[in-house]
Amino acid sequence: MSDVALASRTGRFVIAAAVLGSGMALLDGTVVNVALVRLGDELHASLADLQWVTNGYLLALASLILLGGSLGDRYGRRRIFVVGVAWFTVASAACGLAQSPGQLVVARVLQGVGGALLTPGSLAMIQGSFRPADRGKAIGAWSGLGGVASAVGPFVGGWLVQYASWRWAFLVNVPLGAATVWIALRHVPETSDPLAERRFDVVGAVLATVSLGTVTLALIEHEALGSTRALLVGALGLALGAAFVVVERRSSHPMVPPALFRSRQFSAANAMTLLVYAALGAVFFFLTLQLQTVLGYGPLEAGLATLPITVLMLLLAARGGELATRIGPRLPMTVGPVVCGIGTLLLSGAGAGSSYWSGVLPGVTVFGLGLTLLVAPLTATVLAAAPDRYAGVASGVNNAVARAGSLLAVAALPAVVGLSGAAYGVPQAFSAGYRSAMLLCAGLLALGGLVSWLLIRNPPRDAVDATEAEALTPRRSPEADVTPAARPSTRHTSPAGWSCAGSEGCPGTGREEPVPTLDS
Image (tube, rainbow, N blue to C red; front, top):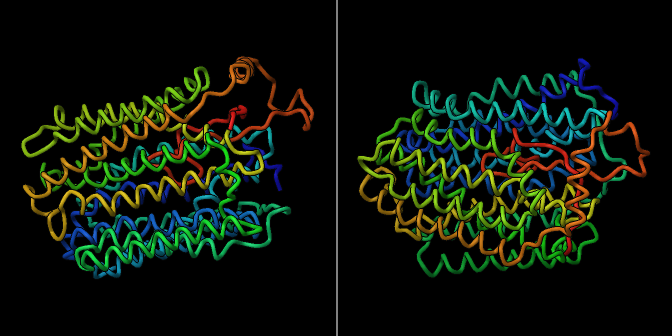
């Protein structure tokens, strides 16, 4: 069924279900970092435990998000979305009831599995349910409402953690999840892809999960394992990663089609994604702990401290995409990470005695401006570099790479800068490690900009001119004046940015653009 009108009662319920589902993941991503210090104190958690609380979720999400999208296409997008929301809700309740760090980490891994099922389904339900003429408006409505959730998240999450309990950072998902499941089952039509691949790359999914998990174990638990064992475990993880590549190359139905990486543009954009989102994940992990441990912020203040980044993304990310459409993605994808790196250097000076206005706000503002330059061009470049039939897979691969980058950085950097045990609760010890980590993150961002400058190529000028001409040409509707065979391909180009719900991108910045043809 793909004939639902946006103005209809069913259309409004589809939007409501999609926004509530992706909003849960957005809120959870915002709140967990803010809650780390409080939950660490109550559960007597070490820094390694806090790393696992963050990375357990990212591990499952990064490994399984592509499989989740495939399951939705095959068995029904609403069905898999509902299963994902229900799974995420039950796992959130388990997080809120956890009595030890180990219980919480297991629940977070299960929560990531639910996120991998619901995240791709949010946008897929919209794409599959609405009639073509209304899809752009529907995606815009979903993006705008999701942007509101992203902006409100730091305030709501910080307030819950500070004035109720860190447990409510997870338990708040229970009523939201119940409402989402009720709306989806009662009012959202089922859609699927009759041509979807009936076989699934289960072996690839298992290898990806175990490989990432093993490398993460070696990085986080290096102190407990000892140097020799940690190296052996890490080598095993890399070997499993190599096995994953071999399986994907030989599979007739790979989870990650190797043909995508024959495009230099696609490979370069994902290499840049890995570097930049490794830095972004680590910046937010360390900054939130620094604000609470060293500067003495409460959870609410720590949550609100980074709100300018969200506001800038909501106001300017679409303009960043328009700039890249006019001049090509190479310069924005080069300058954006460098500007983020400058913001990170400014944030590295935030320490004991720093005021928000001079020590934190300038850094988060510059950092946010850099994000507005890079996220939309990055996702548009990834999608444009892939053949039309691989558009969904290309978006999912880029999202998985971004999650994996954050996962590995949060796992590795504390050890690199000499932080372990209960160091996150000792201001002097943590502050020294924080500064070193921020300098390393700035280096990763600069390297990401260098990769873009050396390897990303702008589309031919005639493709850019055609895109601009189409954007300036008024139409009665996207479907009114052309036959289906003559319509240009379009893809939803939302950035897969720092606070995104998943492969559908960052709410608040979505739009549809004609797909330019990029040289591979």
